[in-house]
Image (cartoon, rainbow, N blue to C red):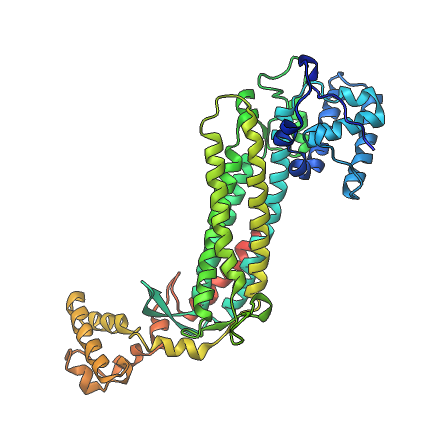
Length: 463
């Protein structure tokens, strides 16, 4: 069992910290997830100190061996985390000193916990972003598979939640693939700014030791160093930026979830969801509730809240490091956890979606979805669009009175609204005709949907 020792800074004080204060200020029980990255950063720092002649080779070897022992204990769940030692850094440093003696005390030469924690968070977040990028790609793959099998499945496209024009279900799903592509682009962009090394900035002003920060950056895989020591230890822009990107991803997941919920209702009946993502009712035996997508909507608010928390945390802080910054970790950690779990579950959920094409086709006929196609037809015959719009509006009103779809009106009936309408009009009044006419990049024609799927797959493979 480890023995708690006086605080690293306790020589300045005449009385110990109150137990209440210890509990209030300690971070070890949530920042211990940084342990492996703290060790990674410490080893690179030790190697650098040895390189510049500040740390002996014997000390470096002892530190390396001690850290290996500690890392093994942490991974196996045998490491004892002590509240008295405040945080992940002091717990590891104290255990290292217990194992190897004075060499462990020399490890902290030329650094502060301020630049140490800033480095640990960046190392951890970089690792998490890499994992999230893979999850985004997996979800895109699930959506692309479903889109490909429904490249010709007709459904109504909506604006204002009213039937607007025929589209394909595959085209609709591709909208979310595009959203996720932007999400991945943002994550990669954030990663560039995460991947800058604060270590070497010490508490706020740098250090008098002859350190080599570029060496440490190379050892840890950072693209460059942070160039101002004050900014390096107090900057949390990267955490805010990441959380903003995460909030956008969750917003996209919430929009998709909302549509799944709507499509699953008997009023729509466009899809069914696998039972493993639904629950029943304690009182109504017929119910099948879409709990998972509902929770995705709810958890989106949670991540949005973390973004506001981080922005509020930083808004009043003077330079440089302040204890407030301890509060950056829990929102950031929970954002990563929530986003990771959401991407995983939504990808699997999409693989369990069962499409009901007949219900989608019936819905297309309920809102005169090919009315715009009829207007376009008249324009191509030489009629001004505004006049065509008026003629079709009258035709829709008449069809509604007759309880018919536009395609069910006779040529004689259609001719009463414009003499330009001929037998060829029926080719554009079917859902398939409407789809086929939108044959351009970004359009809903089935061959364009398939081309978009191929482009998306190629883009993912290159990422």
